[in-house]
Image (cartoon, rainbow over the protein chains, first blue to last red):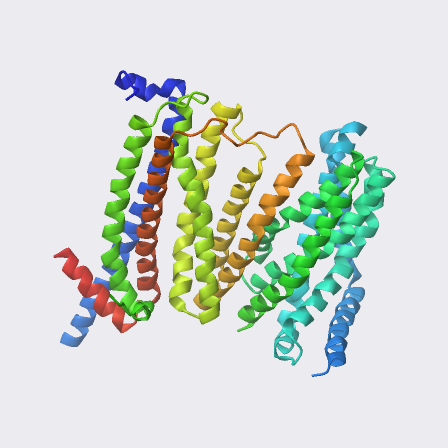
Length: 61
Length: 227
Length: 251
């Protein structure tokens, strides 16, 4: 373990800006991708369920 | 099918395209005009310093040639696509890749060759002389057919697609990069006194590779587009 | 154990299979990312030449590897699709492109972040960087070509042709830029880190790479499921399997 304190860890030996920008960009891209897929799936599911319910209504009528 | 009928068909394709182009000469003249104008803009933007112009000349001339070739790509297949001639070509007994190669050759004759012939004049505008001018002409002579070959793949892929003009540029320009590097490199290295041979032979290799691969890819793309 | 793999090549069977596999890939990916980050930040020593800035490679190298690997995988699926005329292969190729493009973008961004303190420049026209940039253009081209064509079948096959052409192009670009750099000396910067990597550094990088790989599989499977559901929304299997399964999951 080479970090004396939390502030030393975040400073990254003076390269904190570069290191943390890289990791933050990677993390946010991945999270954004997962969320986008989640929303896409939710939209599809909502559409399917609406159609399924619609189908049931039609047969009932 | 006999070998001679195959070549006859190819010759017919070339003859027809060249004839059509001769009838509408302004079309072919436009891409040449474009080349001249783009090349003339650079000194106005960069400044008249001869040393600077000489340094940027290979890159500028090659990029301009690339763009001029790109602009003319839509003409390779669109007219035949609209009037149904392309459909007949797909159904013809001759291999489609061979007919495609004929069309690409015609395209090079119409829009590539004028660029090659004009290039020494444009090179003089930038202060190129002697060996460097020769390298420029030779590199364009070897490189522009490759540009037509690769460009035809893109033109076939976007046939009848909306916004195809911009799309074909986005597809084709990344594929043009090696040709640009070797082409401009040939001129630069001849100016530096290293000699252009290595770059020219690499351009030749690109041409051979595209000659073998591009007509098949283009034929596949045409079949997909016409299905 | 013998598994009848061909059974899963049909979308009807693949859809629920992918749904079952996604959580496992995701869980292992997150766990490995945790391990990799811990190793990268707390176990791997400081590089005596680059200081702490080298830690960027723990995301940069995996992202760069994935960007190229995914392009090849996408081209393979595109080729299988062309050869066997298999819809599932085209859907896989379609699902891979956005993730591949994302990793290409990340490789370029983190590369700039690493280059600035190490070389003093955000960008150099090195063979690797230039190939990566053109790879991004090709990913963009494939996705734009697909969205510009309305007919799904044509979009599938056209982007497959372009993906296959691109797979020939990238190595040629790499070689040509390397060649070009020997001509234009001055800007040449050695990519070699010079110092030998400590084994813990290498291990952390490999763990992160495996984690990114598993993440990609999970995300791509999730996307291919979306694509299947969107494309075949009217077919019976989808109504039955997808909705019933989703309803069961929701319960």
